Image (cartoon, rainbow, N blue to C red; front, side):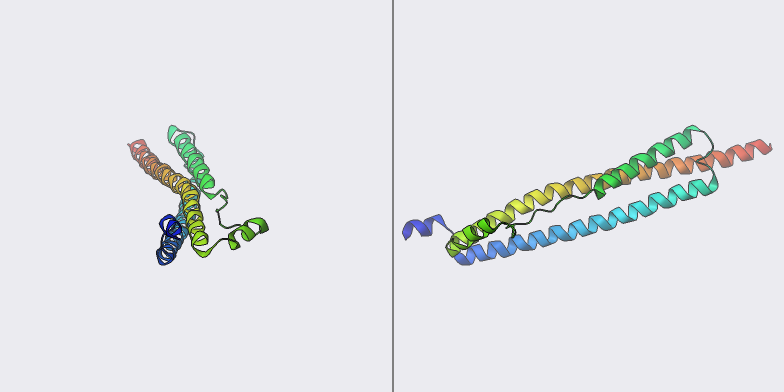
Length: 168
C-alpha cells in the first residue's frame, strides 16, 4: 500500500487537477469562439472594402494600386479561408471506442483520475496547436487587410489629386 500511495497523488488532489484542467479547456473553447467571431468580422470588413472599391470603380481601372489591392484581397481572403478550414477538435476519451472505455472503467479510481488528467493535458496540447494556427492566420489576415486599407486610401487620394490637377 505504501508503494501505491507514493506512486499516485492523493485522490482529492487529482480531482482538483482534473477540475482545473477542465476549466482551462473551457477557456480554450471560449478563445476558439472569440477567434471565430474575429474571423466573421474580418470577412465582413474584407467584403465591404471590396464592395466599396467595386462601386467606386477604382478597382476596375488598371493601376499599380489596383494590382496591389487585388493581391491584398486575395491574400487576406486566402488567410481567412485557411483559418476557417475545419480542424477536428480532439476529445478524450473517445466514447465510440468500447475497448478504451472498458479499459478505463477497469482501473482503480486513483489510476482512472490520473489517466483522465493525462488525457486532458493531451487534449489541451493538441487543441492549442489548432487554435494557434487559427490565431496566426487571423493575425496575418488582419495585417493584410490593414495594408489593403492603406493602399485603398492612397489610391483614393491619388485619384482625387489627379482629378484636381487635371482641372488646372
